Amino acid sequence: MPKMKTKSSAKKRFSIRAGGSIKRGQAFKRHILTKKTTKNKRHLRGAVGVHECDSAAVRAMMPYA
Image 1: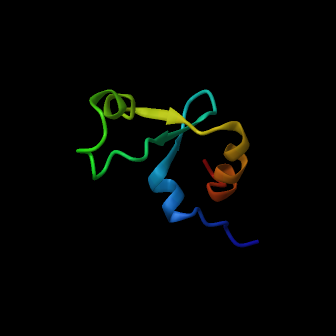
Image 2 (image 1 turned 135 degrees about the vertical axis):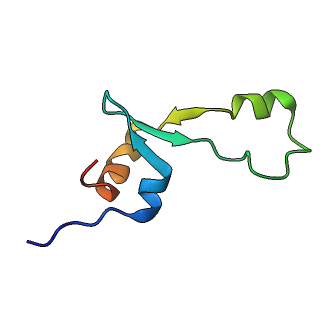
Image 3 (image 1 turned 45 degrees about the horizontal axis):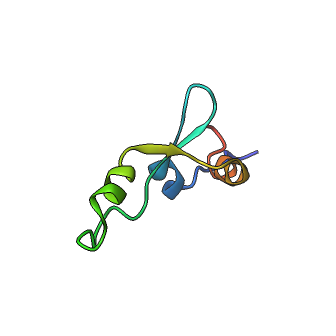
């Protein structure tokens, strides 16, 4: 059997934590920041986990993670 390929977009966007959960970056923090409040931008900092209903799709894109 040939090797399965990891989706290049997924390996750039997601990483697997030690406990098995999937880490992702926050969206809506790149541009058009003037109309967003300081509180909104502060809460968009850092990384969050992928929701349980989406984690199966992410794992399918990253078969060896």
